[in-house]
Image (cartoon, rainbow, N blue to C red):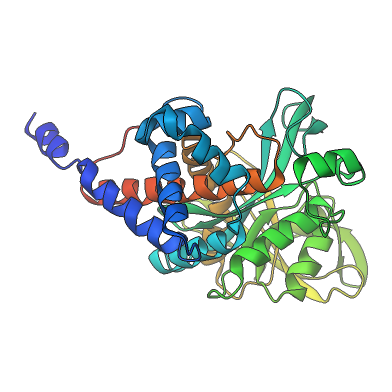
Length: 373
């Protein structure tokens, strides 16, 4: 009983979270010159943290100022002139200082929708669910470390049907300069935008269902180190032949210098391979976990690190599942408007709220208790 009492007393009050809210908002909103915009931004973030259920404008406004503030906050997100890209950059810089090290983890973000008016929504086959869904698709970038991950960029992927339809473009205020891009382009641009001007970190992403070689080439062009998970069937050059990645790793099953055990967690192998075309060389890195084939995960990488560090970085991809769940709790996927800029402003503000919540949870754990989901 005494231990329980100690843990309850260790729970931080609302004060520290409010201090974090002020600190993160001050850093993120440094590009907003008008005090009323900074104030609305803080109120919106506070509403995301405090509202119950879906983070609609009505629920967000009710937390701080009641329903009378609803129109002003709606205008702030959908129609105001503030540049969400500058806020993203400031947030990424702040998080980079608070959480040095780690990696840029790139994740797809599916947002199921009802109806056809939300910007970018279309029917698409979702392999993980085995069904056609009406949804938006976006790319999220997280600065992830061992104990926490923070969203530092979101980029909405627009299907050709939206970009070629003049009526839809006008209604959603899609910028004229925005052209067709593949999901691969979307992912690499989101990562490079997040990393711009900040200390070099590897980019970690899963390209098993996409064009893995295009991802690798474009990350190399941007001088971003990478760990890219690839399909076992991907053909790579080895010994004058093109060989499927899984066959290369299968050959490593025999005792040889590239094969080793790292603790009790996994069996690891590394092979130097040639990339298709003029892509140069990279390491094919394979490892498994208990209950799975040891070559269950196959990665291409140019990260100059030992196998233990490479494994740690690869595992950040699954570690961000927890961070994505926290982001959902503060409404990252809850924007219901039709505006392209509105979607990006909302996800930017929701990422600020997620950063406050994640830093607060980290402080709570340091105080000796586990936050309740």
